[in-house]
Image 1 (cartoon, rainbow, N blue to C red):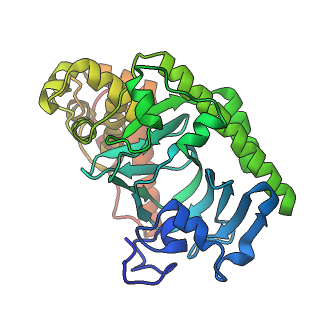
Image 2 (image 1 turned 180 degrees about the horizontal axis):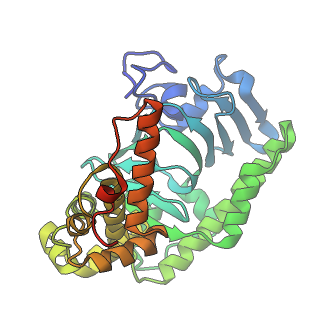
Length: 383
């Protein structure tokens, strides 16, 4: 985390780097403060200002990263803001995000991003979904970005602009929609919505088009307005289909995070949905719908992903029978485990074992490994 006593743009150590708010305006800075900092001499060379259109556009190189890593930032009439992150982070980055009066829409294209609320509940921003959220008053969350490539488009839209420019009006009696648009919501609203193919096409053009200078500024501002229209339409459509829409309290977010932790670590015995709901103190309907909204996959899909990844790790790194690996991830039958494993990875467990054995032999022969088990030992079990 960036130290509050350090000047803007510097870092506390090699392990923790800030994101655009911290780099431009210091730890705890708001989105508006980050954009205001673009007018300072330190950053002004990266800025294109088009006052007659109310547009400020900047392509800011990310300190401490490769030459191709940058944040592209645009403000339109001080009511619509966008950040396009294109980078290959060499360092883990994180920053606190204070509450601001914006409807946020995040479109992950590549790489993992996690939001952590005040109760340390993780909210994954996953590819193939857009996360629409509105922070509650006096709340904050923390963004975690691990090292690696990342492409992310984030929009921040003033609620009044969403109404006046994009026609999003909360119907009478619509509690969730009203919270999304009200001036000072007390609770955080989070919806995870599927991305329409038209939105995917717009995102591809926004990220890949290679316009330069003022043409890039005009192109990006037009695409951001287009995306805002898609967001308004998606919110309206999702709100009309009331199934699965929730406004989450801090307690709800903590409950879903507890479910995530249990599903990713407790494989024996396998957790049923009723047992999981009882363990975390909620009902099954809210658990199923809320979990999918926040994490972008069903409880079964999430649990199966972690079960299979744990099995792969055991097969690759541990010298134990395949039957024991199966039992370790909740399968009574080795045959059932082998079928599920192949369905998930496209390979049988015994094939992974043999590949691991070959790799260990090669590393041992090259002097980089610690020795190898013979093929017979690694193939313990029929599959």
